[in-house]
Image (cartoon, rainbow, N blue to C red; front, side, top):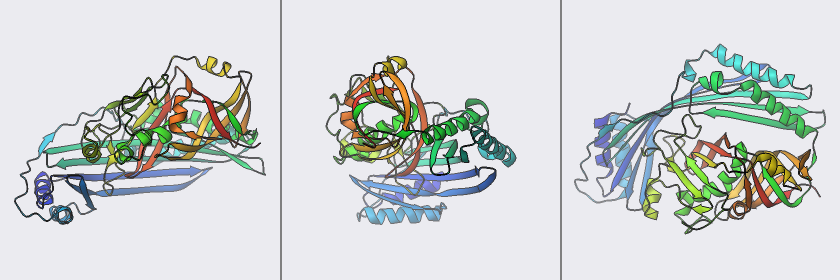
Amino acid sequence: MLNRSAAEQALRRAVSTGGDFAEIFYEDTRRSRLSQTDDRIDTATTARVHGAGLRVYKGLNSVYVHSNDTSAQGLMKLAQSAADAIGSVKGEGMNVHLTGAIVKNIHEIRQLPMDVPGAKRAALLRNVCRVAKAESSEIAHVTAALNDWEQHVTIANTEGMFKSDIRVYSRLMTQAIASNGRENQTGSVRNGGMIGFELFDQLTDPEADAKKAAQQAIAMLHADFCPAGVMPVIIDGGFGGVIFHEACGHSLEATSVAFGNSEFCGKMGQQIASTKVTAIDDGTIPNGWGSENIDDEGTPTTRLVLIENGILKNYMVDRLNGRRMNMAVTGSARRQDYSFAPTSRMRNTYIAAGDDDEKEIIASCPDGLYAKEMGGGSVNPLTGEFNFAVGEGYLIKNGKIDRPVRGATLIGKGGQTIMKIDRVGRKMWMDTGMCGSASGSIPANVGQPMIRVTEMTVGGRK
């Protein structure tokens, strides 16, 4: 635990050379990973992450230092290093008195993952692999992996904050590979949350995930290559939201906006998307994969409407970039661990449900591409230009799903694409991912209902 008296002394030292704000982020985390490939456990690891990071501001200048020595002496060394780097003013600094605050927990944890016997964990993975392999003789390999961690944090700053929180995450990832002896295709499913092992006992169906991964791999093994061209594209819900996350979400983070590195700079209150589009970044969803109680600066988490009926309403803002932009923080400051300074990041980011019937969305599309599952891709936050692989795709002919196609790529620009959304379905769901950016890799949910984009460039084969 972070000693309050030691934290007060370190914070005083940190601002003793002219700094106007200082913060300590203390962390003690236990991590576990267990994975199985086919019928053999191939990874069983545990790890501990322990340390503290200390940050000092002087106007818009910032210094961040960190160490795994969290003793009183270690904290004072950190504070002195930061103070030496931020300024040379000699004086009394400021008085710091830390007051503890109760953090409301909105994420019920019934069974800590690390308290679950290894045999029960292994049995879950064994069953997942068995179910996926049983789906077809064409399933050559299956990998299932359990990842979980328990993070204890305390955040203290020169404004008197002294808050502690516990975050528990659990996630199951299943990957199936189908093969015909000449080529392979992959299907994958992810399921997780800020929740304990009860995720797998009560809230999700690992066997259904296993079947879905296998069926996706088999479908793509027998698929034709996708034709290239400009066409309407229907993107399904869940991980389909990765396009908004990457091509638009990062461009709405203060990390980009504060420096003018976003296509959405200076557009607050303007229409940046179709009137069909309302987009939200919500850290308050109980047990959500990207949820929190407080962010990594100690600000209570929020439900933030980014876009409402096409109008830009908010950016995601952390403390330092809030200074640069003269805007209030939004509870969006996140980091991988104590070795990273926090910055504005997404949490559970999604396009909200609309009022269009999903069957009608497909029936009203004479020809086009149905992207049932999205894969990975890349994006330039400054321009919004993106390139995403379609993990599972189907051609649409005369308003009906025709046949599976593989090798499809969606190419476009975020700002243009969200202006071309003319249908938004009634059912929204989310999928888990790990988001990488300036402050490391963090859990983030992406989501949306089924949407239709009137026109997109689809990469494939002529």
